[in-house]
Length: 360
Image (cartoon, rainbow, N blue to C red; front, side, top):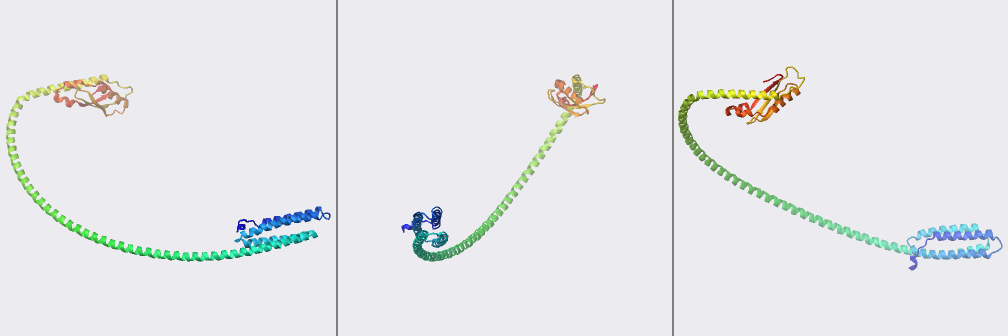
């Protein structure tokens, strides 16, 4: 069994041996055609020893190659045919024939050993095949057992699934029953709630009716009280009107005098504003004839300028800007505080019309 661990192929050692043998034979024929017979014999002996060692290695390799016996047999036969063909072409001397015969004897011995090894390899291969058949049969039996176990598992799984499906169906039916009962309970509770709310609604409506009647009574009482108060107020107003008429007649002359004084003061304020704006206005050159712009002015309580805007443009932007700048330069108009309090608000907003040579 130890020899089976050494593995050497047939082909390469056999080819090397044949090549070495042919080389030595050619050298012996060409260089020593007739003189010395011992050198060719020594070369042949050396080649034979190499082949004997190779045959031994091949025998050891054959024991290691039980699974490749058929392939080794074909290679051996091809090498033997090549060896025999080459030997027939190169056999020219008796020494060569003797060496060849020795080689053939050695080869026959090697072949016998190889055949014995091949037989042993075949027996081992047959034993291996038988073992594999047994293993295959065991594996087949194991697969059948596994398939049977898988079938049983599938059947058990299907049974569990059927039972689980039946349980789910039962639970679904139970859940549906509970939901129906819960829905019926909710409907009963909802109906009771609707009845309760209807009762409360009737009570609220009755209470609202009572409250409305009470409010209506209170309203009638208030209206009667208000009527009495209006009549008393009308009486007081009539008395006050009579007194006011007497006072108005008495103060009419004084009011006329005050109105005249306020109008004179207002006219004086407008004239002061016009004069201040005229002094601050610089008319730009090249103003077209008939140009006129209107500026809207809004003052504060003390105459300060709140806003100045172009109410109506002249069509000339330079002219409009000059008019607006004149108003802003002339402000503030503190003379507004000198007007009577009754007319100050009336003169806090006014318009100024600008045209060359005049301000109106």
